[in-house]
Image (cartoon, rainbow, N blue to C red; front, side):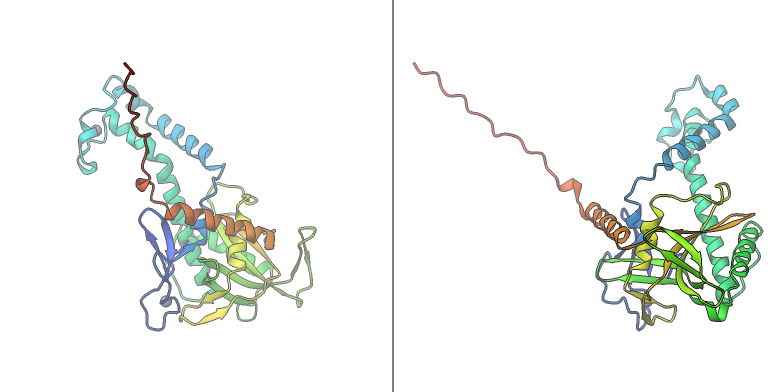
Length: 312
Ligand SMILES: [Zn+2]
Ligand SMILES: [Zn+2]
């Protein structure tokens, strides 16, 4: 969610990882466009919840603007603002209202993404040290992160392996940002999918990814989340903040950590080799789309048929 040093947004194809420009950067030899980001690869999958969420947001915006919609309903849908630059539009005509309603879901998602970035930054600061200015909106989420760490009796010095680090797979051409590598007293049985308590002093290494939301219930999970976790789990290398490279360790399991204002939930998910294989399918599919130049595809017509001359 945060903007790590090695990632950038490339116009038209989204987030890719590459060299950061620092001396000794281990990604200096990565060629453009770079390593596709885990979330960018994952976004090739249609998320069934997105369309209903957008429709709901659009309907809510229309109800909010109902008086203005009634007042402008006799105007032409286009109007003079259709031909004006965004900065010069009036904001109150029928065309402008329509634009506003159409943008509502995007604004909502951008707000949620911004909140997610801030929650992650504060959660990482809590673990890694380093104070951030107080953020009223974020504070309840951070309190839940602290409650999570306390509930699992996390000693920050002994039980945290790493936080907010870049993982890289040169072999498969992707990279991503992992939230937390943490020793938890939990065992994961891949066959049954069940997680069991091992004992406070018998901890194993887990990979966690935090998700914040203002509205969704604390138990919310999505079918595509395991792909992202598997990508982070099975990358070969990790780049630390000082640009040193370490091998990604073996993990007992991987889990989503849902942060809400009044609750949190740790939800282990299946992230075995089979899930990783599916994730690599998403990497391959998204790379194929990003590499395509559809404008270069030309139509072809059958050559004109020369009618045979009538025999005299
Ligand atoms: Zn670098
Ligand atoms: Zn207007």
